[in-house]
Length: 462
Ligand code: BG6
Image (cartoon, rainbow, N blue to C red; front, side, top):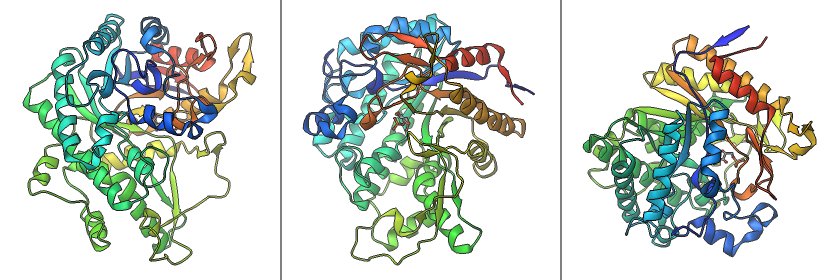
């Protein structure tokens, strides 16, 4: 069967500043939390590879944009590094960074590739973390100034802005589950970080609208549909709690302009609500978006708890559910994530039925695989598993669109194999293989498949 997509469908891929640029301590850039954490705890990073060893976009941006073109991308998402643009977060703008981003955006446009630009992709300037990071409202104000500066500097050419990439991840990683700096485990602080991130998002949206900049503004959320083990009311309730905490804590404010009442009531009853100020709800109400980026990698399967909560243990989301390992689930064993293609469709249906069918696109979807060299045939990685992964997801996106979803494009994670936070280069996600020793780039079979799919705006599959 032929799967055809609407005219002007966005075909592309996503990446981020910190994971690709390199020069993490050069070019006038300030340090981020990643530089600091790596300097102090290199053992936390796979094979001791830190943020200075990324895929050298700072040196190779021009050649890399040629490769994007070769892959027939009509759009490409990356981020601006706050610490590169404003090294201490609040002060002077770094002219080297302005030149760099100007060149990148101009070249993308010159090559017919629309830049989609994120303002924050997990990379907090260390100077901002030192004053409390997202726990401090001064950092919210500094972010909002940074956003305004980006709109002024680049807003004549960048027409698709995203305030944050997966804002719940720094909350989970930094304040609940210890996989991002500052490695705190404290729910109330996590809730404060999440709340202040929503405020920062809303203030950036307000600045964008007030400045009458061209184009549109949105956010990128990692949505993990929560599936209950069974239809038993206790399992269903557990799934509802997981959905409230991990999806609706961001989805509702950015699409409805307010938090779900039952989430607020729940946190209030456990004295976990962040400190609010009187005009916060008006600010949050102004933060509704034009475009939602959906990152989808895996579903969340939950069941009701099997044991009673220890009331003296730290308050955690898992007080309300247990994670459920569904027998027979299909796994990506390298990342330890379930592969469940219909989840991408369920997200689109949920948005259509419950959130007014917003303009949206798949902003990340992908598969990290270890030791891909074993798949080399005639000098090229034959990653048929990645082609299967993408096409099986795209079939479900296609179904969502045919039923009326307002899904405007599909971006893969990622373009060239890049540095994956604590996993460094363990799992490779790219359409293009990166040789770490030489920095040589070689297109994988999936890159060729994607180029053809984008060119034809369709693909064939049973
Ligand atoms: C998304 C992020 O969560 O998933 C990316 O936006 C990240 O930054 C990607 O690299 C893949 O996850 P990981 O942890 O395997 O790199």
